[in-house]
Structures are given as C-alpha cells and as structure tokens.
Amino acid sequence: MRNTNTMRPQKYITDHLFWLITAMIWYWSVLFTAVPGMTVKQSKIILWIVAFMLVAFGYIITMKKRRNDLSLFTNILLPYELYAIVTYCTYLPKLVWSSVLLASILSLAFIVLGMLPTAHSEQRSATGWKRQAVHSLLGARTITAVCILILIVPIGISNVFGLGLMSTRTPLVSDASEAEEWTVKNNIDAVRLLREEEWEELNPQQKPDVLGVVSNIEIRYLGLNHEVYLKSSVLNGETAAHYNHRDHEIVIDLGQLETVAAADVLDSLCHECYHAYQYQMIALYEDTPEKYRNIVIWHLNKERQERHNNAYRRKDFIVFFPESSV
Image 1 (cartoon, rainbow, N blue to C red):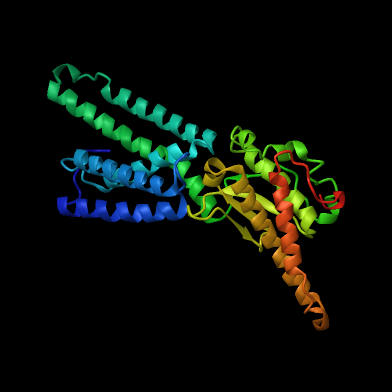
Image 2: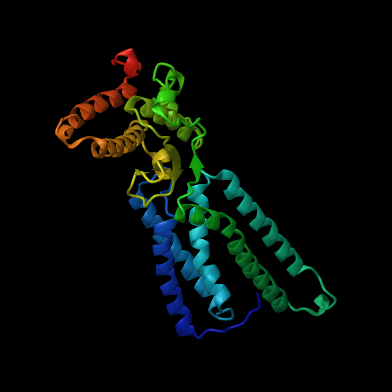
C-alpha cells in the first residue's frame, strides 16, 4: 500500500470510467437487488449516484500520489460493497455484519499501527504526521474493500451457480401420494401467516418457510409426482419468480419477499407451481395413446386451480372446496 504512481493521469481516469460501467453491468446481472422499501427503478438510480460519487471521490484522493491498480480496484469496488451491505443486511445479517466487523477490526488495527510512535517520531514534522495519517486512512480503505469481498464473493457464486441464498426449512414432499396431511385445513396456522398484517412481521427466513407449506399443499392438490425445491435468490430485478423443471426448483426473488404484498408473493408461487403441473401434463400427453390426446382437460383444471388459489386469500380462510380437494 505504498504511495506510488504506476499509471498516467489520462489512463487512470479512462480506466475508472471503463471499470465503473463494467462493474455496474456485472453487478446488475449477478448481485443487484432493490433497497428494502424502494422500487427497482429507484434503487438503480441510487446505485448509480452512489457509484459515481464514491468513484469520483476515490479518484480525487488518489490521483496525485496513488495512481495504481490497487487504488483503482478499491475505488471501483467500495461503492458496490456499500450498496450490498445496505441491501443484503436484511436477508443475510450474519454474513453482512461478519464482513463489516472483520473490516472494522483490521482497518482500525492498521491505522493504530501506522500512527504508533517510532524512534524517529520526535523529529517528524506536522507535515510528516499528516502524510502518515493519510497513508493509514487510505490503507484502511483498501483493507475494507478487500474484507467486504467476504460478502460479495459468496453471494456472487451462489447466484451464478443457482445455489440460492435461502431455502425453505419446511419438509419436502416427494410425491402427492405421500402428502395427505398437507391440506389448508391441517396447516391453517401457517396459512394464516399469509395475512398481510402477519406477513409483514415475519423475518426473511420465516417467509420461505410459510411458502414451503403452500408449495407442499400445491403438490398434493395438483397431484405432482416429484418434490418442488423452494429457494430465494437474487433475480434480475424484473422477475418475481421462476421455475426450473430440470431441477424441480422454484426461485423467488429476495426483493419480492421483502417489498411485495403477501397476496402477490402467493400469486407468484402458485403460478410457478402450476408450471410444474403443466410440465407433468405434457409428460402425460406424450405417454397417452394418440387416440385419447384430443380430450380437453387443461382449461377445466386451470379454472379449478384459480379458484383454489383464491382460497388462500379468503379473509377467514374458510375453504370452499370439498374436503378431499383441500
């Protein structure tokens, strides 16, 4: 972390502009999630403002004596790390605060060690003390940027490889025939948590757990012959949820869990569960002898499914289907 210039001023500024835009594109694709309580559009505007201001500030304080790759790395990384701390502290508090604590401890230690008196400190001028303080603070800034990677890297890997940041802790149901107990009536305490006033009080892990109950009810109701894995992760900011039939996996956007009404999250989940049902209907169609393939059944089941979904939203949760169907 020496005060050295290894880049020409013109290259230093052009590299900042190039990597600012590149990092923004990468962050939107892999890590972006909305600020809790704000829309995607508002959050993107905030991210642009924060990134531009902090990169410009970093450029100004390093352009004279620290024009090097390490300073460039720090200047570009810090604004995105700050945004990640704000947006992910609700969903991953342990990981966020662990990285912040580590950064704080190491940065403070670096500053203290850098400012300790030495054998020559008595002859050090005020200018020398100021130079040492600036060196310590800039070094601590670099240490902070490196430490917060503990937050960025796991989330990025999880999102790139589709691992999910949170999974429901509700027991999986592997087949509808094994899900006799998964009815609305038998799980009414969990279903009641979909009321808006209850939903808003749930923490980020409890919400996927409630949705896991709904997912199991849907498996039984739709007659699926496979489990449905439910996860929450960072999607592209515009997608509420998606279904991956290869892995039998529903992924719900983290931002949706935090900012969207329970009824809308429920709609997304039931919609994705119905995609699983559609895939099973395709398989059934392909396995059906050709002379029976013109029988119309899809639209009837679609109408029935819409009425079933409405059952969750009944204020008193008195289900109006026959007991065998709920």
